[in-house]
Image 1 (cartoon, rainbow, N blue to C red):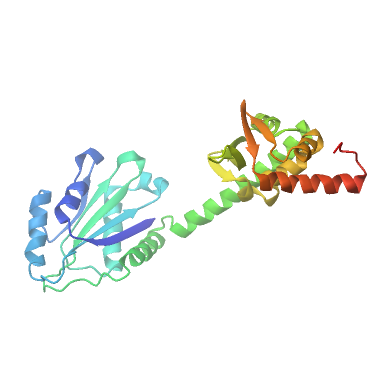
Image 2: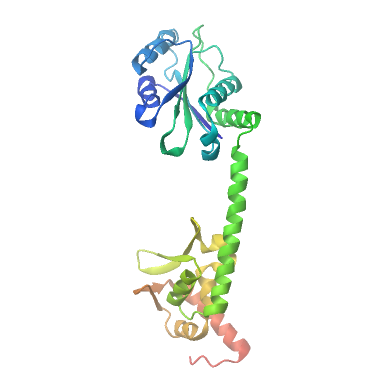
Length: 287
C-alpha cells in the first residue's frame, strides 16, 4: 500500500475531484461534517480555516492506494477501517475529514481530505508530510495484513532478476544455435527465441545500443548483463562481419531493411578486439 500526502489551498477543486461520480466515487468516511456537495463541505472547512489567516495551504490531501490485488477484495467497511487507521497514525483525530474511494481502472484507492485547522484554530504541522504519509500507510498495511511497499519492491526486484537471467539464457542460446554474423541476423534470431531486440539509433543515424523486450519488460543490454552491450555482442559475432569493421571504420549495418552506422568508438572497440584475436590465433584477416 502506498500513501501520499500534501497541503493544498484549492480545497473545492480537489473536493470536486474526490466526489467525481465518473470514477464511481463512494464516501467511506465523514467526520464532523454535514454538507452533501463539494461546495458545502468546502464552506464547512472554511469556517475553521478563517480562524487562522496565517495558513494559506489549509487543507490536507492524501491518497491511500492498496495494491491492485488487495483492492479487489477490500469492501467499504475495510476501506473505512484503513482510512481511520491512517488518520490515527498521522495523529489527525478530532478534525473535519472526508474520504472517497475511487474504483476506476480496476485500481481501488482512497482520496482523503482533512482540515488542517483544528477546532481551536491551530494548524497541523505538515513538515515532511509526504514521507510521514508513506510511513503511516506502511504501518496500516502491516497492521491489517495488506501488501506493503517493501514487499512490492522485493517482488519486483526478484522478478526482474528472473527476467534478466532468462533474456541472457536466450541470448546465449541464439549465439550457439544460429551463430549470427550480423546484427540484423542477431535481431531476427533473438525474435525467433522470443526476445524482441530494439536498436537505439541516435540523430546521426548511428547505432548506439540495443534494448531487449521480453515478458512486459524493456531493458538496456547493460541492464541485462555486462556481456550484452552492443560492443560485446559485436565481439561475439566476429567472423566475416568483424573483418568488415577492420576494413571500414565507418561501417554500416543493416537492421530490418534500414542501414545505419556504428558509432566510431564502438567500431574502434570491436576492431581492436578482432585484431588482438587474430594475432593470438595467427588468423589472416585480409587487412
